[in-house]
Image 1: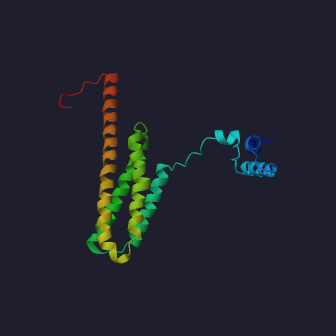
Image 2 (image 1 turned 180 degrees about the horizontal axis):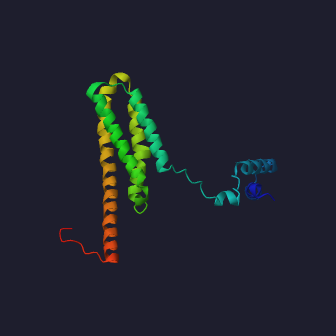
Image 3 (image 1 turned 90 degrees about the vertical axis):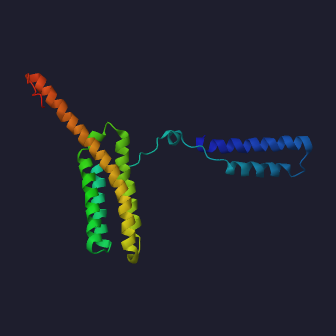
Length: 202
């Protein structure tokens, strides 16, 4: 018997037997057999199909993970599009461009040192959210603003970008501290290996 339909047959039989028992107990009239068959058929149709075992046990498909380099490329594209689509002039335009460039450069520096984030999943997750969620969403909101509102909207955008800049700066500084400490540790190791005596002022 096909397992997909077995549960429907079982449900139909149970309903049919229940109707027979009810007829024997209280009497359902001369049409009881038709009633029993109809109810059993409806119950069988409405009963859910049994899912194949392999379908039940199949693990969910993992969501595609975007690489940091791909995220950076997407950021570059968004940055260029913003510069072209948002109409500004004078000092505000220069400051807007400078903020975008500074943010992109910091993210690029972090991506170039991505291996340093491997041991800190929280920092890595924060950077991914900044690059893949918060920055794109902030850009989208600005892009959807009408042209007449660009001057004020850009100031709000820059304020939001400043928050993201602060967070990415913290990650970047932590990476730099790790790099400096690694250099100091390597210097100490080499001095011990070769018997170098460090001068007091060092």
